[in-house]
Length: 249
Length: 315
Image (cartoon, chains in turn brown, green):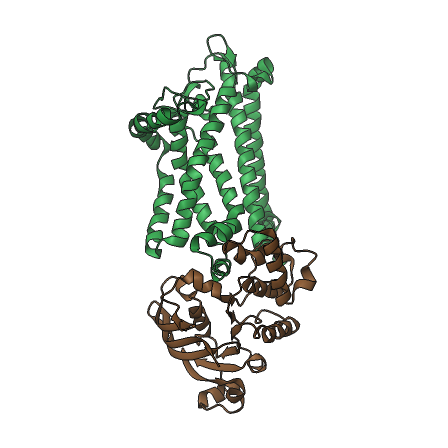
């Protein structure tokens, strides 16, 4: 099993506050890694460090190393990195443009101008995100006219269109209803054939359903990390057990 | 549900409050309508001799000869529009630059320092800006900017010499400075209102900060920014003192922005005291009427755009 990403002694925060404390973990290729933990445990900050979006916020700082294919992402160009590591956010955030333009946004940034290539990328990305059949006849319609679940799948399609290697998801279903969430979960299971997926969730059933590996964060520290079945059935740490049995959090 | 304004908002209980609100709303509404109508009535009444004597020709005539009692408003309408458009052309890019810098680029401590400083510009009396324009800025424009434009672009009618210090260009530049406070502060608010998630979505797709600004943030805020620009236009059209002092005050229509001109506001301010003949006075008042109507329309458009934009934002 190859490690797609390696996180070494990662510490991050804002100003005087430490949000992440000395996190070390590996992210295996073509697997789904779920990150669980109570609110404020640093799980969002953790994924934001993996595509260097953390540093966009004023006052943010970071220490330690993050390796992607064995090269330190903090030594390389962040723009290039973010094309290899995609991100789907907690709230669906399509641009107020047409469905087509939303998906074509990333490829256009990469310099693809050819109409035919763009058409093809848009169609394939929407198909991968299981949205093509719903919207293929209204690609020129404004993306905001879609439902919340469709908007989130559009955002996934938009992230896929730049052909990333890793996809980060920060609670992608927390603002969706159960039906739309189930569709996104199916999609994630499908995506791991081609991509490495890291997904933050506060829904433990979801983490158990879709994860191959699960990491439990508490107060900025990585408490336990292992195969999902082991974490949920036989946790080694007392705190993990307390959390997944619902004693706190 | 949100109610469009104070006047139509009634709480269900408390009859006393209802009466109070109704009373205050009525007073506010009536006084505004009454004042506007009164102003309009006075302007029309005062300009009646001129309206009757010149008719529509007044708007299209370039004659301005108080000795022969020949009057036409076109040079002033032209001057007002050209100086205001120049102000927008020069001022709006600066305002956008300020807004983008303050919201996205500058460290928080520097933006906290710059923003109030720019708003302070609005507090300078326009006569002071006019004085500075006459003694400092106009000679600078004459010696450097005009000189440069004539030398390299003088073959264009737009930059034909000779270059005067007191000119349409100087007026436009002074006006540009005067619209900076309002346009840049509203543009800044518009940029701040763009959700952070929009910017991060663009960055996460591999956009540079510049690409995120040009392709996502500015388009998202364009409605409110456009409204801000129109408000700036309203300010530029109505500005009197500073323009009067630097535009040269010659009622002519010249293709060159380096030549002097005249604006509606400026001619009223300058010649009101000299207007002894009835028809002269009436002509000046009619120019005031035209200025009033144009200002009201421009400001109404600006308010409508910002209102419509903010309403879309809320939904």
